Amino acid sequence: MDFNDSPDEAAFRAEVRNWLSANGQRRTRPDEAFGEGLDEAAKLALAKAWQAKKAAAGYAAITWPREAGGMGGTAMQQVIYQQEEAAYLVPQMIFEVSIGMGLPTVMRWAAPELKARFLRPGLAGEEIWCQLFSEPGAGSDTGAVRTRAMRDGDEWVINGQKVWTSSAHFGDFGILLARTDRDKPKQDGLTMFIVDLKAPGVEIRPIHQMSGDSEFNEVFFTDVRIPDQYRLGPEGGGWKVMLSTLMQERLSVGGNLPTDLHRQLIELARICVWDERPAIEDARVRARIADAYLDQQGVSLIISRGLTALSKGKTPGPEMSITKLVAAKAMQEISSFAMELAGPEGLLASEVLGGNWRYLQRLWLGSPGARIAGGTDEVLRNVIAERVLGLPGEIRTDRNVPFRELDRT
Ligand SMILES: Cc1cc2nc3c(=O)[nH]c(=O)nc-3n(C[C@H](O)[C@H](O)[C@H](O)COP(=O)(O)OP(=O)(O)OC[C@H]3O[C@@H](n4cnc5c(N)ncnc54)[C@H](O)[C@@H]3O)c2cc1C
Image 1 (cartoon, rainbow, N blue to C red):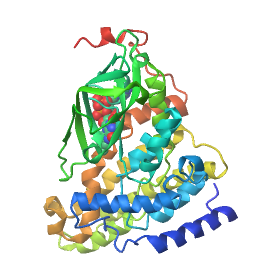
Image 2 (cartoon, rainbow, N blue to C red; image 1 turned 30 degrees about the horizontal axis):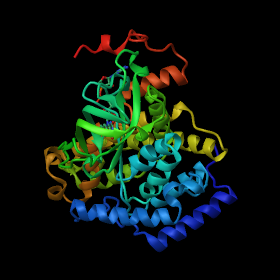
Image 3 (tube, protein in one colour; image 1 turned 90 degrees about the vertical axis):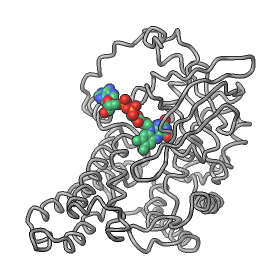
Image 4 (cartoon, protein in one colour; image 1 turned 45 degrees about the horizontal axis):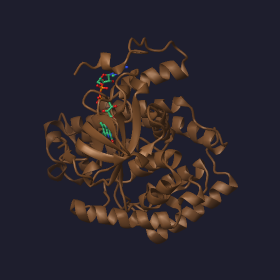
């Protein structure tokens, strides 16, 4: 592994640092969040203003070709930008689906006039994209999608329900996986579309989470009409289009686990009292902090291995699934240990506990979701077993069976 920047990478890093220090706002505390104290509308407006600035400088899509609004740069430059931006107060998640999944799918599969229509506004944050794949009966098994798309002349009529759709409550467009043929085996009867989330018949219901936030939604479609021009890829080719979207998601090798959580645990263990002594004096507490440090180092080394591959112009392989698997579990264990440190008071809101707890408490509340989103632990283990270790694949009893026979609803 090579941990150092090449001369070109160092020059790019210097450029990024200059641009960020001239245009961004540095974080002053680890728990400081973008748009703190603002309501959702004001935060969204601030996020859009930042994204517009970033797109104008070419940093919104570093690896994209220039004609599509990108910088024509390398994957390593993208990683360098992310590493530097991490020290700044920038919006998290709002544009992640647009730039990471929605727009790359449009870029790969849409007709030229649609690319001209959608790519630039999306990159500049003027329009926000969602991913409408999961349904109540189709999560890990995306091939089981039931939402119907029926052809009607030059249009398609959509009926059905999606769930867990991140950002749909302020989204503008989505990539929608729908069933166009129930007589074909499940993966062959799917088609991908662009859907306008403001179209008549689209109803978006935010899901209230235990953190108090509502980041994702149920989305209902009742006789929603989509022009055939908004179809992405061939009719019945939705599975292949979806795989191209998920490949984009898996190629993301950014830092998944913060690297300074052990420091925060040390600070908290100094102020918490266990058996009338500072908790840090307890050997079991110190051992847990050491475990947290080792987890962080492990994740960071796997990421470095992916970065070394990127830096040499190679594509990191499915072994990057290991990063997400280990990082999400470690995030949950570390933040849950922080809550244990606080004892019964750990259940209080962070405003009552004090600012030191805010970040770890948010991680704790968000970590179960992290173990599900982008592939559950079990599904990632299957990927590692089959594609990294070369073990036999899962036995599939639904192959070559018409979807109509699998779904009797
Ligand atoms: C924070 C968050 C954001 C999300 N955002 C989006 C979004 O924007 N768009 C979208 O379309 N979806 C989104 N999702 C949904 C996510 O993709 C699904 O939750 C995920 O794929 C799991 O599907 P499921 O919830 O239906 O669980 P299921 O697939 O029903 O799984 C239930 C359990 O069975 C296990 N399991 C399933 N299949 C196997 C198998 N083959 N082998 C072993 N075990 C298995 C799972 O690991 C899990 O423990 C989001 C989810 C979260 C948590």
